[in-house]
Amino acid sequence: MRSPREPAAFTQVVGRVFLLAAALCAVLGARAIQGDARPASNRSGEPSQVRLSWTGDPRTTMTVMWQTDRPTPGAVVEYGPTQRLGARAPAVSPTYDDETGKLYEARIEGLEPGATYFYRVGSAGGGYSPVRRFRTAPSRIEDFTFTVFADHGLGQAARMNVARVARERPAFHLLPGDLSYANGRQTVWDQWFGLIEPLASTTPLMVTLGNHENERIGARRIGYAATLARTAMPGREQWYAFDYAGVRFVALNSDDYRNAEQRAWLTRTLADARKDASVRWLIVFMHHPFYSTTARRGDNGGLIREWLEVLQSGGVDLLLCGHNHNYERSHPLPVAPDAPARNGRTAQGEGLVQVISGGGGAGLYEFSDRRPLWCAARAKRWHYLQVRVPRDGPIEVRAIDTLTGATLDRFTIAPRHSGGPQGRMR
Image (cartoon, rainbow, N blue to C red; front, side, top):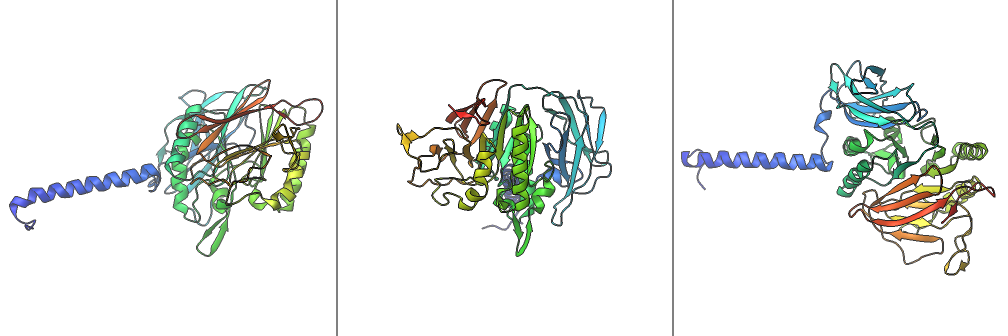
């Protein structure tokens, strides 16, 4: 091989160096796109990882979070009914010991129900995000659609789910646990919030805690510290409730199902919902399911003993879960899982319907050969749920294949009736 000092080879070497540098930039760029590198926009005072949620009344408030690499004094959210904005809300800074940047959280209050607002976040010294928009909850009963997936992560299917759901422009999105799979690696949270930003910056993201939110860094357990600092949920945050257009949504921390305080809160919350004439539907979301035919996991006996009867007697219509990386739907569950079949199906009464939507993007799990009578449908596919709640008539639920957009499963739950608080499957 000739020396690079030889004039004849110099141009070739420069060309090779240029090509190598270009290839390296391409690789690094691809890694950033895939979520394997920290977002470039987070290396300064510029805001990144912008996300919406509700910590107050969804009709009149909106909470915004973001992160910068360094502190930026005067951080605010600017907002208004037009892109001229005009109003401001100051930000506070949640912290935890292992944070990777400066977190900011701002709650906008005094909004009009059922209205569209424009907003941006940042500061004069650090710069501002692009102007985006959000919509508050309506003050009266009207049709709306929300979406669901759990067990998300950073893979290509996770990215495709974000793109598909964002195009649907749902009223909000539920994510029942196992968000980033950081597992102690805190920069993974930055990657994940960057990945989900196209959805979460325009659609409120309401999350629950899963087992992968209970983190360790080496031998040191940090528990839920990262998730609780990086997300903004109502009330106790580990478990909470919010109302949207006559539907009460109840979020639980099933990773801590033995917690007596949580169980007492759940019992009171469901009892209050049964007494509240404005609550048309009662929907619970948590990470772990009661029943499953996933080969490596199956049923959760402790969870069944602690919470199943509470949810059944509490009048819950729909239970949304994850944990098992696939799709599975139950028949209504007031009857024992081994109840006798009638015309080849489970005896159909009234009761909550459990749906596992664990195909958010993480690796998929196999099913066992066991197919008990409670199991109405199942599929080993990446997917998300589209849940339509009309002003009148049944809830309509579709499981949509992430890769093809095809409908994997569809079912409805009829409205509550005078004979009891629960819906009926159709």
